[in-house]
Image 1: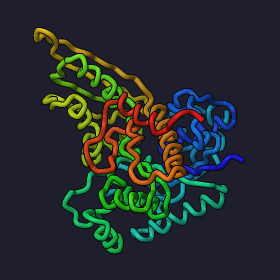
Image 2: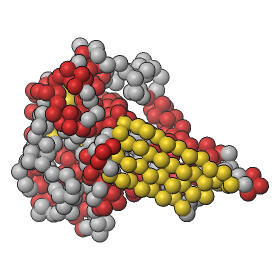
Image 3: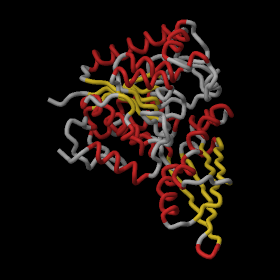
Amino acid sequence: MAEKVGVAIVGLGGAVATTAVAGIEMIKAGSNGLSGLPLADRDIADMAAYRDLEFGGWDLADADLGTCATRHGVLTEADLQNGASALRDMRAWPAVGSKAHCANIDGNNRMADGHRAAIGQIQSDLDRFREDRGLDRMVVVNLASTEKTPDANESSLASLDAFEEGLDGDDTAISPAMLYAYAAIDAGVPYANFTPSVAADLAPLAEMARTRGVPVAGKDGKTGQTFLKTVIAPALRERSLHVDGWFSTNILGNSDGLALDDPKSLASKLGTKGSVLDDILGYKVEDHIIMIHYYRPRGDDKEAWDNIDMTGFLGQKMQLKLNFLCKDSILAAPLAIEIARCLDLAAQRGDGGVREELSLFFKLPQTADGGAPVHGFAQQQAMLDEWLGEPA
């Protein structure tokens, strides 16, 4: 008998989450294929099947998921009638919210204030999820909006003991993302951070995951522009084409774009996107410019545009221009699904702590020792392939 795996999503009412849930529900109904799912053609022993995934989670929005999906504009009415109708009957659990950490995102579906109370509620929600759905295992995936980067000098973030004291005192330096990560790790549930927010990559929480043997991975899903950057930059390096400048800009109008319209949240996002290029090339690109603009009319249809200036043989100058017209959630949702399946597999294998093997899914992969991550896509793919092993 197939074992059921629960995927508890932070930000369940968001565009990426509703797209992921709808996609799996349509697979179960036979109205959706497996295109776009990177591991669909791999037969890996003990990896959960797509149709064995069950979804629940938290969100500040109190509308049913069908209404949320309609608002995001990714799914059509036909989708919601053709296999994804279950979204109409699904609502998110009350969530932890903080405008101090994510200024542009708020809602009425909130759980009680207080860090310890929130952690207790999150863990109670997970217990109820397991019981109500008859789950064999669970994974928590953070798909919520981007939070601001915390001050590095905050004392409550320096050690696990200090973090515990900060929880007791409701320290405002501790963000919602950190609370979800702590609650999951403390409950022994694998945790993935698909956002740029600081969560399980916080040193005390990473150490907690390691010592307790709980698989964690992150951060910031690598979906479009950065994905192409990690494919193209290694090729330019190997051909000795010197990158003089790389100008990247993109526009999007979904809730992710709205969150990033706050300068503090935007700074977190740019931090995860900016380090990739120098690490791959082995030198600092002085004119590496990244811009993200919230443009409401575009909705989930993101446009990413890159201009690359290069110097080649005999000092000759060249340019490469890329224009990626993509659907943000259509790229992101399959990755979130695969990350959940991989973390569940890691838990079954007893592979706890930071799972660097999942690096190709993230812009700024979390590393076990806190050192520099591998960014080149081909190297990351090899890491994942070796960990997954031969097909069953």
